[in-house]
Length: 308
Ligand SMILES: Nc1nc2c(ncn2[C@@H]2O[C@H](COP(=O)(O)O)[C@@H](O)[C@H]2O)c(=O)[nH]1
Image (cartoon, rainbow, N blue to C red; front, side):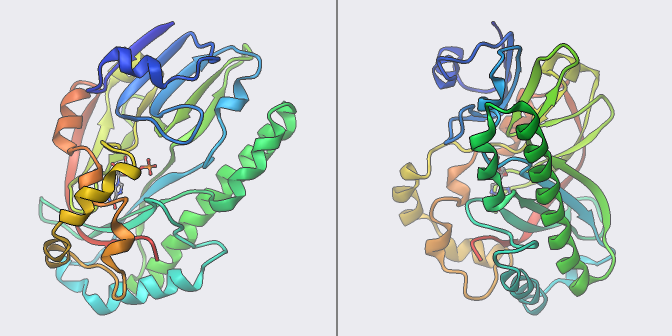
């Protein structure tokens, strides 16, 4: 098996994160590589011809990110308007336009170069995703259900987009990319992407870090031919949710609130497992993919919501 390691983790450790029954020709580990609850670790792209490869492609199918550019000057965002968006999303609970839990989030972004605010939406396919699990032995039904999930997740991001437009007016769609998908190959194999997006040279993608960290809009170069046309979907976790507790207890949430808007009523306790201390640094990750992407724009997070 060819293993390409663009992460900061030692290669031996990465091997231990792969399922022992995975038969892959190639595995790419991106800077956001981290183990999770899914069969494959996050931040990976896997080329396989294993007949039952679909069992490695389950979990939060179609989860992805949508980047939107507004016509708003940064000063036009305030607590009242951020709360109004949060209330709209809360009213969507259980249906399209529900941000969901975990580290699904909506950020307001201010560019470092002068310019209008942008918004970054990160949501998945919510409970829909579990429906593929029982279909791994029925490829046609699995593929149809997976596609339905990917479409549902995209519609979910579109519904969050609608909620933002209801408050802020028209928003330009910069990109919408799922990061838990697979690409079927003509020869029966597949490239499975878990926490990684499909990009071709020239394509834009977005790299967020955490609720208090910068976000980069990047363009893929020709070098992505060497990463199975794949790129990271963020900086990735540096620790598991279970390990966050001691750091969360010491974290200065008041300083976080002073730097950016959080919806009224969102308790510090809700952010314990997904706070800034749980994720890697953006510049560290950008250094690891130098040559594979070029930074087009960089933003500070000036508003966060999640765990609504
Ligand atoms: N700008 C923000 N980035 C965040 C936040 N929470 C996590 N992250 C980054 O996004 C991805 C999300 O990944 P997933 O594994 O849950 O699909 C992750 O790699 C982080 O680097 C946030 O609140 N704001």
